[in-house]
Amino acid sequence: MHLRVHFLLETGVFDHQQPYREGMAYIVDRVGKPRGKKKPEISYQVKWNMGNKTSNGRGSETFHDRKRAEHFKSAVDLAGGHYPPNFIPGGGDDGWVDDETYRRYTNALAEPAPPAAPTVAEFANEVIGSLSGIQGSTRKTYRGLVAHHVLPWFGDVPIDDVKAISPITIGAWVNDLADGAAPPGCEEERKPLKPKSIRNIHGIFYSIMQAAVDAEPPWRTLNLLRKTNLPSLDDGEEDSEMVFLTVGEFDTIYTYLSDDAKDLAEFLATTGLRYSEATAVQVRDLDLLSDRPRLRVQRAWKRQESGPWKLGAPKTAKSRRSVALSARQVNRLLPLVAGKMPKDLVFEGPQGGRWNHATYYHRRWRVAVYRATRCEYHRRLDWEQGMRILQRKIRNNQMEPCGCPGVLEKLPRIHDLRHTHVSWLIAKNLPLPAIQRRLGHESIQTTIDRYGHLLPELDDDMVAAVDSFMLREQVPAMAG
Image (cartoon, rainbow, N blue to C red; front, side, top):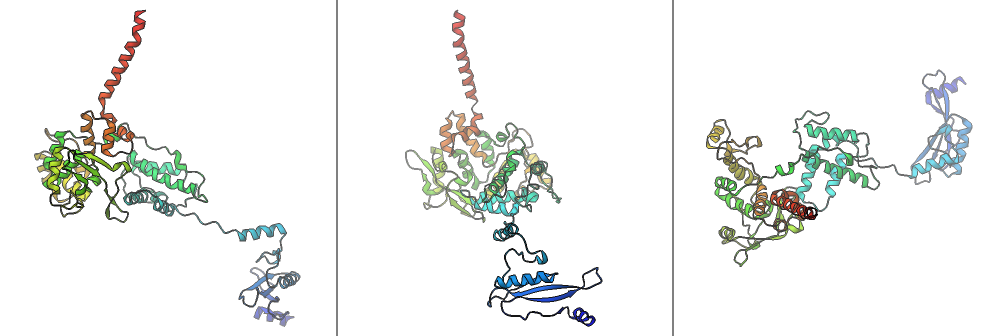
């Protein structure tokens, strides 16, 4: 016996008591010394060829009881070289289970494991990429807002993580945006965002989380962004963003514009077109020699997500419109279309082709506004302090009226020429529905919401109507 044990310890295997035959199981006795024990122990390993001759798989189960090993070996032979029913692979001595346990085990094998939830960054990219009915530039804007204002806080979080994306973390995120705080783990400097910007970013994130709720199967049961307490918009904030110029104020800026920028500025102010529409007008869109000269707005510049610009449809269906032109406008436009082909642009940039918005805005418009808002003395002082206006972009903190007599005290954007156009029309008591059609607003409500406050005379009419009504009501009482 001593020699037998010595052989086992040296070789680790002995006694092939069943000769190997194709499809038949056999038992291999093995000896090992478990950790922490002094005496070696013998185990019984049942081996067999899985399935048929074409299968390279081999089965193996280890038992510590000889009888159980022999019982399992017989069951494998009866099963034709497969695991027998009611035995869970890898169970060894405890592999035999009841019918219900075995049924749950086989059902678990049949059901595929649920896929891992994507991260917020992965899901946001998928959702934004699937949005339809938006311009490429809008899609690019969405991606930029999410990348800068959402992903630093939630980008690596699984979309279904209810602890990482909860009312508490969402509220803290909104506060960080409002305070200009850096995301967790970052030290980058950030500017506090205005309530309107926070609402826009929150709206995009809301849509992404709603897509997670609507997914099949859903990643989340509730959209927790639906009850976020957002910063309130101050009364008049939307109005303060719009600048309305008088004719004299526009003429002041016009005087400081370079010659190649004047025609476009006047066209924007006298037609109310958007910049993307005005710079897309072609010769064939103008009817200048008829009894009622008109401009047909049929296209606008669209920026693709990849970067290039191309001509496409205007912003909305009602943006396709006809705009009446005055005799002065006709006289201004005739020299611009002389000698051009029907598809040539009416307004071209310095190098020909599309008038790049950034070039016009920074190199033409803002330079003129700067000169209109700073007197000669302060412009000279700026120059002495190293501010080279014509050599670089004018930053926002440099655009500050000096406050001297005779200078402009407003800081209009190019789009404010559209607002200015509306204010001029309203000053002539033109009805809002007519203004709506001229601007190409999809709804009259948009026109009212944006420009209704410019109609103070309506308040006087309403007050007069109330007084008249109250007077008629009091007459019978006084007669009695």
